[in-house]
Amino acid sequence: STVTSSSEVPRNQEAHPGGMTLCVIAR
Image (cartoon, rainbow, N blue to C red; front, top):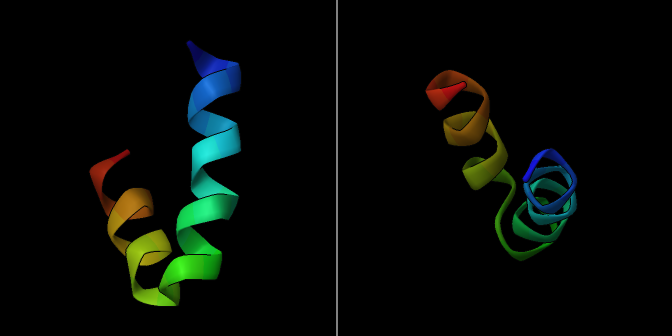
């Protein structure tokens, strides 16, 4: 599960940098 989440983070960042910030806050 952790590996999948880690892989999804960078992908979202490329699609929209704002998404990464939201991911960090959610964590």
